[in-house]
Length: 127
Ligand SMILES: O=C(O)CCC(=O)C(=O)O
Ligand SMILES: [Fe+2]
Image 1 (tube, helix red, strand yellow):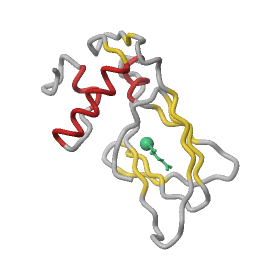
Image 2 (cartoon, helix red, strand yellow; image 1 turned 135 degrees about the horizontal axis):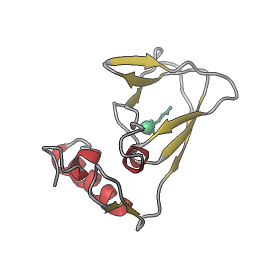
Image 3 (cartoon, rainbow, N blue to C red; image 1 turned 135 degrees about the vertical axis):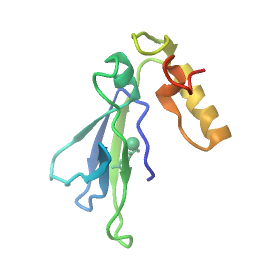
């Protein structure tokens, strides 16, 4: 799975002992060590918005060391209600439905996720 941020508020992950999850800290990729009976909590784009960038949506990817080994993970994504308006100082007010539609449109036309930059008046990618 390629580099991305989750659109969620939080994501709760359980990966098996195969490992492979990596998070970006600064310019560096850090491997997340699989720990038995332990859940991983990722912060997503909606957490970044509601916290006014106090918390950042983590860039992450999955890179298996051993391509021949099967890997299993379970992800539970916590999303806001679709029509709930997300208000903050750094982003224009938007609903999760609008955010999701914009992410899909960017994927379709640009082949990539632009994400919160679309909703930030300070960003050159603001719409
Ligand atoms: O499989 C994993 O550990 C993470 C998957 C993931 O990042 C996602 O589904 O958004
Ligand atoms: Fe993810």
